[in-house]
Length: 529
Image (cartoon, rainbow, N blue to C red; front, top):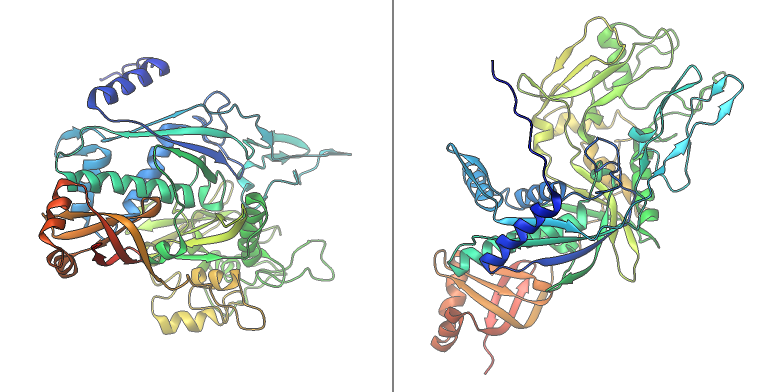
């Protein structure tokens, strides 16, 4: 029988010193990003859901976020090529050997957080009341895992504490063992730089970043400069950014954005009816089909809530992320159940939401409430499992619903079912599109999504021009380190149109010219006469 060896104690200062020495030996230099938290951070420490007072921001967590954004931006590659490319940059196992990461990341100069509880349970005549009184700054829908729990007047779990906005730190990033060929070297560094931009624009630190927690801003970069990802770049990447009018603060924009999701899913008159006249409940019956679907599937309808939803046994809200816990209030209704994702027959604990709901920087220090729509093909190809949760004892569970069963796969069938579900009716053929349409309805017309502005031609004076002889591409680097590329025939056309003197200077690495670009496409290079 094998026994586990205790992990050696790591001296953080010594480890950081060793890393820095390796970078000095390689001749590389650190790039420093000064970061500031703009929405509360939930978790982020070794213990899930807790803020580490001594080390609130962890380099390993940021590395994971950067790796995710890098992978998203390279999703056009086939799986085999993507695996090899990711391993070449970020390291990892492959073919029995371990590759070291070429990206070195440390965090320093963090301010010490003073974690603050999201709310408190007031006392009543019979002990603590079961309803949390949230702090004014907290967004209850985003922070619901932090609310704690009261049972029979006793606090079983205290409300969690979070790090408030204003926390600062410095992210340091450098490279080692870069390729010798200039084009390969540039491609690797540029890919990581882009991942940092996307992380700062749409990612964060801590848990529940897809609900806007742990959002940050970059206040300075040295050496170099920094620019957030623009709406045009989002469109160029095949994604969708939807914005509301800007607010004065990031927290204000965040709360408005998340409240739109809450209202769409649960708001009175949108996601549910108002309370019945003879009911003490503050909310009425859901306008979504899931509750009635569960009542039918477990054959346990409440006497007051016979299943009547015309859409049938559908679970459209699974598209927003899983798991979902269903809790009915009436004693004769089903007991607690949980909806979880399946890949084939394989069970999973969660599926991250394909929507990032958060603040997005605007001009003059303001922030937009924003939704970034990520690729969602995996959502519609997954199956789901309805199973008992906690003390749930529903007969007939678990039950599996394959792709196309929990939400129709055909466009016509989707549209037909959407018209039977009030939050979706008139807003598209799937719940993700419907939320985007609901997010910003123009005044006086049917709700439609805000589209990114069309790409415009730009002229970059003194752009640095590079040529990749291996694949024939021409790249221009302009303001704020933005890049545009011409590939295949277009790249050869631009290269052939340059003078011999220009080609020679490009080969030496020192050539600047006027670049005309559109988004990330390089249209032409104009030599100065």
